Image (tube, rainbow, N blue to C red; front, top):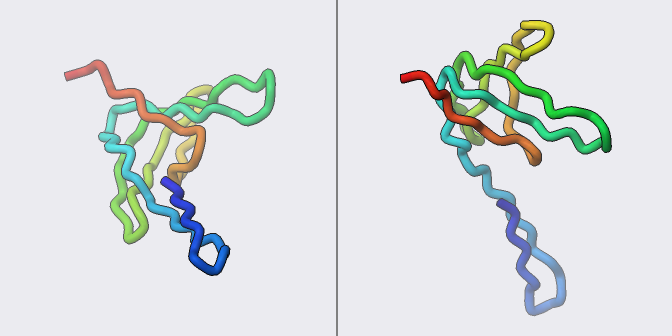
Length: 84
């Protein structure tokens, strides 16, 4: 979340707060692309990695099965796993 406050001097104070996405291994990460006509990128969360500035994820991406570490950003959402 980003918060913008206008100070008495007229200057803006901007504060960014990292919000956890609440993902678990087995959930899916979907990233909406910012380019028109480009389909969303989708992958399975293999590991949730806690960090000082919020959690990040080891993700196995659909299509080519490679894994990478992903730091949540705008346009990303978590779809909970349907498996129990």
